[in-house]
Length: 220
Image (tube, rainbow, N blue to C red; front, side):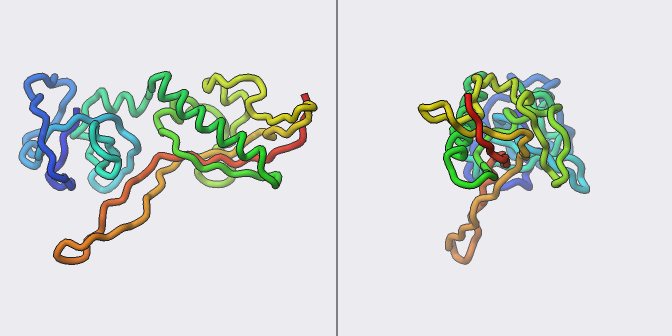
């Protein structure tokens, strides 16, 4: 569970009537925060965090709502369970497989393209990224990027030759490790609607990864 601040944009929402079922351990907020609170909402997960003058704030994906409705919330409005999952995520197998399959499809597509250097940018949940890759690789020279070797993909449970593409004669191409990867939030395009005046429509921040690699000739 999570508390939404009264300062946060809310679009015609009705609070869930679950206060009687909330543990005092899982919902922590003081009287000042109660006075500013507009409701208790079911949070699906925390996507990212940032620090400002008021402290840490987390980007919340609200259960049952569009990604355009995600908001930044102060740490004190979030349950310990949400914060624990953010620090040490354990996504379901189906969620992990969906992300890994998407990455694998894009890699195969890139191996078919011309040119030795290839770059992938795909939607990829950041809790899955942390589950699979945090603590692995080494810092690249380019800020924000990590260099990964083939064995750093071990938790992806990929088959042998997942990073190769062969023809009927057994000749092909493969990824030349290490690869360079980062995770980031991509902002959707700005849009405006008229409602008595010009007004900006909220943007969505999408979880993505970017992966750059060089491909080389290879035979099995």
